[in-house]
Length: 444
Image 1 (cartoon, rainbow, N blue to C red):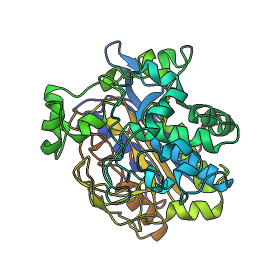
Image 2 (image 1 turned 135 degrees about the vertical axis):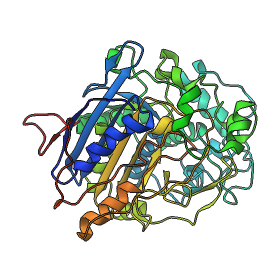
Image 3 (image 1 turned 180 degrees about the vertical axis):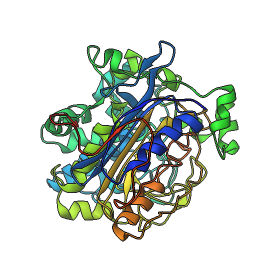
Image 4 (image 1 turned 180 degrees about the horizontal axis):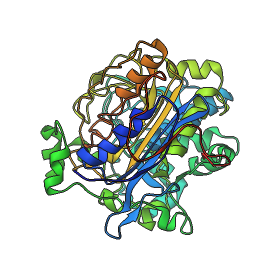
């Protein structure tokens, strides 16, 4: 057990979030992390604690940022929703309508929806071997992507694309956006800038600096914090074989704890190298949920649809549910309200961002302790709400069900996170302030 000081504030009625956050450090091996929750456009939780750099004993600060790996995919999906709202993209049109070269090798009828929902079998890039340096030339990347042959008949199966999906979506955005912007530029100009949030795709050499948390791999005795390790995925990964291992090596990104090295931070990996704070990620989801981002009510309703039934995943070998570029709740990854309207994406090491239209909550959790490299999926347990207030009971259930799956993480980062009703008294103990945010404080 460790005694880790946490900082920030929680709104009245959310005291148990602070207690749960502290327990993640005391009982679940967390090293440094932050959690943020918005109720509509109002911040109700903004907490951080632990160490951003364990070796130098540097504390996690309010402005600390950290790579969020596949939690980046949800931000990319929101950008697609903005383009659909503007009539510049249609989920049910062929990708080749916007990107004619994509039609090669039997992909002419592949729809945008099929591509972004991992149904086309393009998780492994075959033929030309790409390096990180190649990713700076987006035109060359587009040529390699267009020449790929699906691993199965598109639309007949699904299989998680951990890295390649971001490359395909980036080119689709470049083709659909009238200005020809990539996701990095689109994110900066239309989301991060207007919302004044800490969230970028990669980092320029002069950004971040000492603010970036140092990633830490789980080793040795730290495995005691892991639960339900999926050995059927861990063993092939350790032996450097199998569909998932091969899908993670397009291109070879090296070890995840070294993800902040310049050659990775300088390229665009819209499914993998987002960098930001919990506050920034939750704020982006909140803006999408409330309509502050230019996403129409009709498109927001489509995002909130439960989506297809959960189905076996040909890559991660478990049950998954994808919908319009997001993950949806399923037996192996329960999160949000029981009606499956919540949408979001998890990331390696335990990061998670999602919005829940049923409750109006937007949520993000970002740590720097990475899981062991098993890369598979586990079931998440729901903590029952203890409230007679239906509105807050719904919200408690929504957040309590959230825990990142092992497809991207082995860290049960949210295993004990739960809310209390406003009628409950805040939990005692040192740590974050409760009540309204400090006057003049930035929540971006």
